[in-house]
Length: 307
Image (cartoon, rainbow, N blue to C red; front, side, top):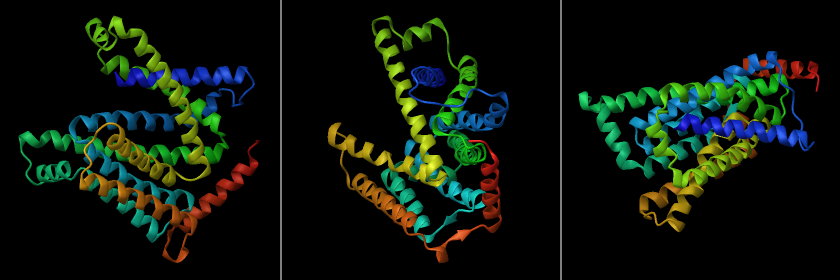
């Protein structure tokens, strides 16, 4: 019951925001219907990203899914060129390709099987093709989510807790609706997911996941606001590397040449990207003059908005 868990996480996050505001620990904007209408497309993209991702994982192996997610970073980078007057240097492109290569090496067997299914499509392989259909929509919704969220943050001058509040509050009905419509709420299934002897522990785990979601929501909002959508997406890919290392060191996952090589190349990709951002080379950059004009106009709009 994925959507139900995500709904609980959003509810817990909103409750924590309300509690911290009551204790005068944080501040964020009061709810406004006008701002909610402008923010709702972001939440729609967020829910679409979650749903299409879950559907893609039903049909595609995780390594193939990861490769597409890494390729989405390139889409986001060029989206920033068009919308925010950003740039894509040759070193940044190399880092994107290295990250994609890392995921291909990590799951080469699954990738090879998936490529073979594309070259030899039959009735038995339609499952894979359906997976690619959902994966394409997932890439588009993921890029739209991070790009449009950054745009709205700039135009409305949202602070980090404002973003967390609107993202989670508006997502509750959009997550609860597919949970009620698509997930199995029968007594039998509830008994399987919440067995009496483990019910209390599962509820505590769900609340803890909500607390973790609160921290991740704040960190995501901060990262998008202070850096860029591309950096946010790149960090999302890089955080899988420590998890892979932990699996080998602490959980007995087999350390093969492919796994070690994939982790090493992934870290190299992160270093190259960091260097490219720290020392940009405009002569090797692809930029958009029209998007720069939009960025300047956005700055003027922000100056007019009340703080």
